[in-house]
Image (cartoon, helix red, strand yellow):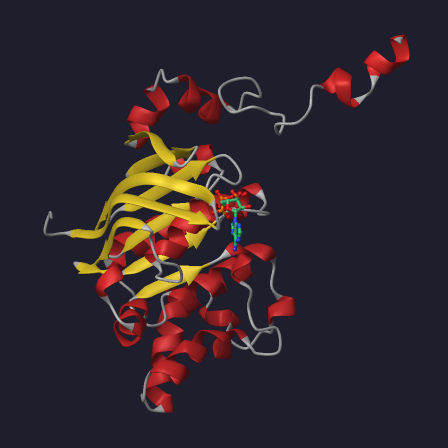
Amino acid sequence: MHNDTLVEIEDVAFGYGARPVLKGINLRARSGQVVAIMGSSGCGKTTLLRLIGGQIKARQGTVRVAGESLGALDQAGLYRLRRKMGMLFQFGALFTDMSVFDNVAFQLREHTDLPEDAIRDLVLMKLHAVGLRGAAELMPAELSGGMARRVALARAIALDPMLVMYDEPFAGLDPISLGVTGNLIRRLTDTLGLTSLVVTHDVQESLKIVDYVYFVSEGVIVAEGTADEIRASALSYVHQFVHGEADGPVPFHYPGPDYATDLQLGAMHA
Ligand SMILES: Nc1ncnc2c1ncn2[C@@H]1O[C@H](COP(=O)(O)OP(=O)(O)OP(=O)(O)O)[C@@H](O)[C@H]1O
């Protein structure tokens, strides 16, 4: 293993019940990298993040985080490792009855014995890092969507994780907040020396900030490369994704009965 490899996934398979979702995934992310995982809806991107977070266990293969194989850890070991991971799941819901400050302080109060004045300094540092120190006393209802996303980000980095996982960080944001969020992910990764894994549909926004991209389809990695390699890719799957075309290997229509049969056109002629 490369000595700055933080996440390493080898030949991982997983399914819900009898249905296979991931069929042999290989992926790696190093310290200081922003790595994106893309693929069409339902291809298993969130499942992959849950495997890395240890919420679910691989049926085959190994998931290693910071050199530790998740399959070999007991509950206490998993819990210890998870403290080094920040997770920002869809929209990173904030506690609506707590101020911005208390939202960010929550993890620190739960997981450390730090005195309140140390917690105060840490919270203000994290809020400063996302440009919202001045918003500490606001309630979530008083924030714009983009601001709420940044508070969730401050909360995700409260415990100084080595790894931050983002599930659809750009979903539902206006174009300006989109750019701000992307730049922030890049900047925090660089300045804190962490690793960011970003699950996203937003190819254009993520290509601006990522070091490496993996495309998942039908349970396997079908393409991977740097942002430039992905932009230049001639693979039809990647081309369709990058250029947002409806026709290509990823069908626009969910598989179903033939359209004419469904509309009973045959019956009309009978
Ligand atoms: N807890 C579960 N039990 C059973 N099936 C599940 C469960 N969670 C997800 N699935 C199924 O597994 C597949 C992969 O889901 P997953 O959420 O990982 O996909 P995704 O790529 O993140 O999708 P999207 O981009 O739409 O969020 C989907 O078909 C989904 O319906």
